[in-house]
Image 1: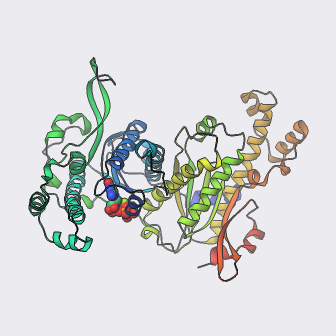
Image 2 (image 1 turned 60 degrees about the vertical axis):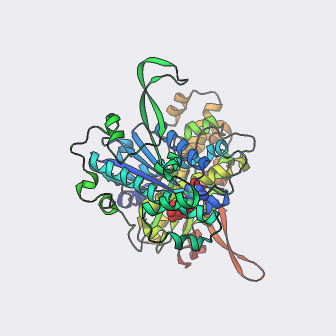
Image 3 (image 1 turned 120 degrees about the horizontal axis):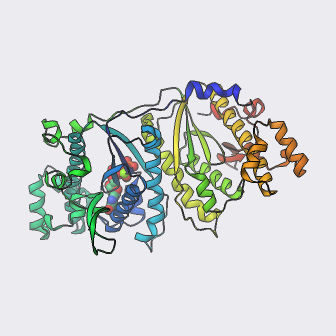
Length: 512
Ligand code: GTP
Ligand code: MG
């Protein structure tokens, strides 16, 4: 088989990390560059009610989509999702878990934006990074959530004072200076004495953050009483530090034995909870490939009436996202995509996120998702985006450019095999064969048999089909000779990535 020569690339270099069994899995999502994003979209300071409610709406969608999330907690531009300890979500594969969560959160954020900011268009694609951390028991999960809520309190109290001072005429520098070394009590006093603000009267959502969980209720969606208890996804702003919430909602995590804050060692010190963080750095001096692929794409393409077997516009949209990815991440030296996937090669010395695998996986999947959403209208002006497209990411590392080229050839060979098959399949179906019959006809056929079938039955020369369908799309930087200084623009080509191509584009791996 054409692919077999490159089989070793998968066998020897593609590994999946599984998260340890019987641990609670926390995925914490955080907005990337939200300082700038919030300025650009004129969020109110220090808290924008609409922005926070939008985050809560995204978290609610996450609980609807992923039943194994038992509770979520969010503040500012971050949200933590706790998966039940026995979850078998994607067999506990770390990259799937993190990329899917971040991508889904991102797309919901984009699609719901208009509901919360009807008069404020999205000016740049929002995107998020994510970390996944495992906690071994209920006590540590409660410690984790308490830690995030303490953080919320510290930041919010500081920001409330800071913006009150700035709004009253102080410069930002003066405001920081005025707050330096103040205790929590001092800040409350400052708010009360200078601004007649009782901090405890500030909205609970600002002070406590938001908790999303499945509540047990005895009312229907309209609030009418019903006999049987049912679960309803609820957003609240409870205290998670004390015992009360947990005593009233034991079914969420189960019963903790002898709960002592932070392992009983430190009162809300950060260090204990942080010890569970397990950072994997990509091996140094390796070329990293991030492969992004759309989830449930059959359904997505059906709902959006994509042409079969190839929708040219959908492929061009993928290429546009790839070009944007290369602008966003200058360390991407090459992209290759076909169908619903795109692979991005990062240069071997990249220091993106200090090579933290989780942050690279999550920000790439989120960014690609956001670009896809932002560009959709341009490519499909008359089609509404009705179902959220979301993408998963796999990452692998290769020590030499030669192996990277073999990886890419493997993907291109996969593109060829898949496209030739689907071209035949849909020609047969369109000519009146049933789908099962078409599969039967194609079973065990060789590439040359398929070409012959197309020619004999449909007078179609497969090699005359558009190159983008047959060869996929390569995205790489090309030097543009401008009048004064040189510029490197992203070009997209539909060509064979054989020795000839690499001889001509050897600079792709050499350019520093
Ligand atoms: P990275 O996460 O490292 O990419 O940086 P960041 O700019 O997102 O900052 P960080 O996550 O540390 O902090 C979140 C930032 O988002 C805050 O500093 C605010 O600038 C902004 N932000 C979040 N929520 C609000 C809000 O409700 N109102 C306003 N005005 N800003 C907010
Ligand atoms: Mg952030």
